[in-house]
Amino acid sequence: MFPNTKTKRVLPLLLACILLISLAACNKGPDPDSVATPQLSPVVYSPGRTLGEIPLPAGWTWSNANTVPTVDASSYLANYSSDGLQFERNIPLEVQKAAPTAPNLPPVNYSPLKTLGGIALPSGWAWLAPQTALTASKKSYDASYTSSDGNYKSVSSVPVKLTVLPIDPAAPPMLTAHLDEQKTLEDVPLPEGWQWLSPDQKLSAEAKQYDAVFPAQENYNAREAKVWVEGVEPQGEVVISIIDDGERNDPHAKYPQPMGIIAGSFGLRVYSGETIAAFTLRAIAALELKCEYAGGTGKGENFYLSAIGGFYSAVYQDTIDWLGENDGGPMSGWVVLLNGWEIDNSASEFTLSADDEIVWRFTCYSWDGF
Image (cartoon, rainbow, N blue to C red):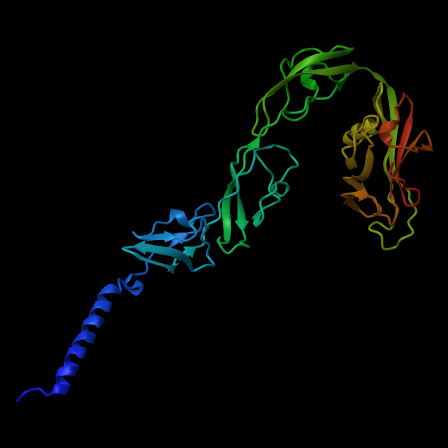
């Protein structure tokens, strides 16, 4: 049997189509889907690291190499170029939260009043114990970090380095020596931490400088200083009384009844230039009482006596710890009379002379704070 004429015509056309399809398939080139997407290891967030520092397989480059990868983004565009094939694709990249870096704080000078709360921290950081006093021996203090940035972890405690520098101690002020009682430097007390270089040295009646030293301590540098000491002789005697005769007008006061005489007509030697304030503190110590006060005893130092305590009251049949302002009702407190006159300024502004008489009165009406 022989093929008919129609079959002879169709067969060459079919073979030609097959050939064209084969040629087209050969000219198509590689398929992007045949290129595998890179699988990258997770990285920890770093504000200084860019995509350009994260390597990709051969043929791949980041579209924006200067981008800093962050936790909130899951992929980044990259270009592929190899063997005539070029395309762009998102590459998955897991960025994990970083632990915060402890702040780098500048050194601070020691101060007995300074606490951690006075040392500023960067945003998000807080001291765990802001009331802690600073010391030169401690090198770090714990702080917490609360993240407001999704790229960092929140942490409950991180040691933060802080250098506290020792300071020079203040030189002692001019001192007064009572020559009837204090014969050598050893008898003259210095501020805490200071020592006389020659404690057996005898005192003179005039003002003179003596050598003192402050040995190095935890928060203070070593220092030497010359300290003025003025030797004074007693100028006679002053009589002091302490009474509570303030008529109460508040039945709900802590002490609704006056206590009467607390210390009566106590004589004590007075020294040249001694103020009511300085004499009062010596007298209270000699009477074995105690007091609370503010300010200093020298001129311009605004001495203020707020409470006297440590005495027995026959009225209340008990030892009184403190009798102070408002304990007898509103506006109650201590005032002082000099030779019968209620002074009109601080007790540190008035100098005593021999035979003066001072009275500290607890009053409920005319308390003006002096």
